[in-house]
Length: 465
Image (tube, rainbow, N blue to C red; front, side, top):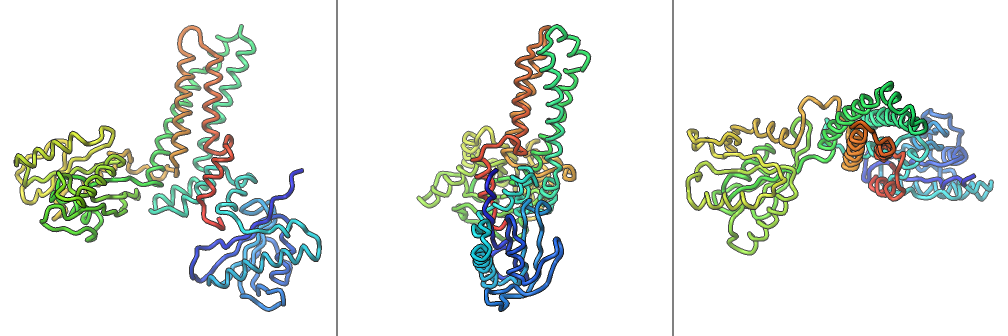
């Protein structure tokens, strides 16, 4: 028998003043603590209004107390929630009273578990929900993603993941892999029936179907990752091309200084906007040219650093200077230095001043001043990074580690398919790749997870969650 984990307590609401604040306790045998704090026996899962009591019986505050006995609670343990007024002093008093009352109960009754009541670590309530099988790892991560969601679409997708949509997809894939592994490993035990078993159970067809299903899950997970993390977009180009004007136009606000003086922008100006619910982190950078002074040189180097790490680059060309020799040389210098792996969208600005100018087929005619071409920029930009419009209802939130695990599973299924090809299938290698694919999927839900991974994930949660 393992000893019961320490009971934990924390303020579960955000710091600062508010109408309501919550102190949450989780552990074993919390009913005596609830009785001491409220002066009454709480009915399970019923809100009870009354005083929260000091040791001498005087009230700290009045509010609602809720008691959720194990296992029917968020963490799977007994959970006590005290909903008081949301002043930071009141909540600190309640927190201190919980710790004090637990020690008093132990001194009076010898309940050593309550005496170990301590402050919760970040994410420890949700970690216990995971360890007690109330949530799998993908759902646990979705809790924080829902809290952190910066757009309505991201919040809805995180809610779907929290409800288990992503996990169900992974479990269905895993069940298919297990079924296929059973067939292959049974065939290895009876090699004389190898051909008949492979044919009778259409192993190749089952494997192909699993690959198609996995590809669909990967596509939707990629959409979810875009919603969660957003897209890093850098506006680049030579001085006075209109980069700051474009940022202002996309944001719908005067965020960056706009003047006809070259080199006005010397450092990065950041703004997060959203298009179709997808967060875009847009960076307006210094004009790319030979620096005139040390400050501008630093700004230009920072611009190139952001370009190299961008998900997409909006390269702004100036139509009014299109045929100037110095300008053309500057364009050639930028083209030579742009990273090969970063998608680039070519925007030809100041079309209002040169409406008859020839625009290359891959570019977009734009006027940051009048707004011409902005809708086309928004749509092309989403397409450039792989967003599929209208797919939001089937999208679940996902993280980079999920995408990596799905990619590993896909690679192992591809290898498994190769082992089936030919007149003499290599069933032992096939069985191993199917096992590795299952393990990769298990990393998403936590079926196969190292303790250090769990520590990293839950340490990023807020205290009280």
